[in-house]
Image (cartoon, rainbow, N blue to C red):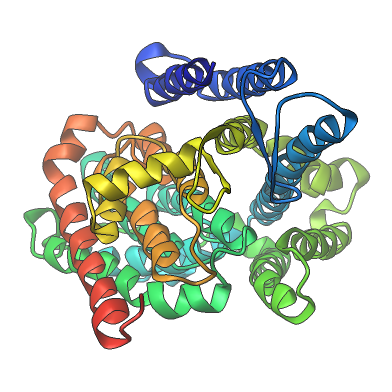
Length: 460
């Protein structure tokens, strides 16, 4: 029966990976996979075919007999659903705030930051914006915002492709060191595997290296020599400057305040995000361009409109994949020497450890794999595989590798897929022109990370 559950996961995972060839939204196999895994798990548990780890009580449940075992199974399911819901509520809040800012055209304020015709200077300005913004509003949203900005600045599509591709590298590097910069870092943060301070302290320098080195090399490529015609004229955003600026800085400020709120109150991050969304929503009800204070026009700037624009399919994908991984984590595959149950994922970690004794090499391979396979299920699986303390080297390195490794292929990250869709970036073109730059940045950043953690600070 264990083989059936693993087979369901493998087939579902392959369907997610082959999303584009199959022309099937990855949300579909994720939801079906999660439901089937828990269905087989429940049937097997009730019939005594295998045991389930009672995650809620951190104990071992035997067979299906008795009300206590039944209650333990229900608690396990509710525990995993609760942990998943924490991430989903957090993401819904962050997505809604970003959409409210966008409705008020707050991101168009960034156009004023670009005042150069030099291709090289423009490359660094766009790169720095991508790196900083992705740490605040997440790498996917930062990529969408900056490619939209590039469309207004660069008319030539061939020239714009290079900038869009390098935005992916900068955005992924920027998201890796922030607890709110990438879904994977958010998952690790909410699960208390990392703290905001620890993540910033040990991952920010490797992330900067991962961003700076590819950009430093790229600035000497022929594509970034000479000048470009940049449209710096003011558009209608000037009429709504006050409302746009207010919502931009308020929205970004409230998102940044979430880690501070968690540090002060010790409450889960989603509580802070609920407060942040409430404040931004409140202000958005009263801040509008003066010419749009009619009831009909005000609806165009409301949070209700923002909620209708967030990608619910992405939220459901995370629900499916996280619950599927939770099912694998709960399935008992063996017993440790001390008598504790060993779940499927922990058993896989032990096999990897015996095959590749160096854990750092395993994590770097995970980073390379994240360019091929979605990094969300990879990180979710690693969270079930390893049992390291908060802010250990392992979790910091997983955050870095999973966050930046996806830059090596255009389909390897949410930011890359967004750029691919918006600018029709060809997979082979990216592989030939950009992959080597992303790989150099990834390896250099990983080297710096290991130098800081293993050599300078001698962390284990």
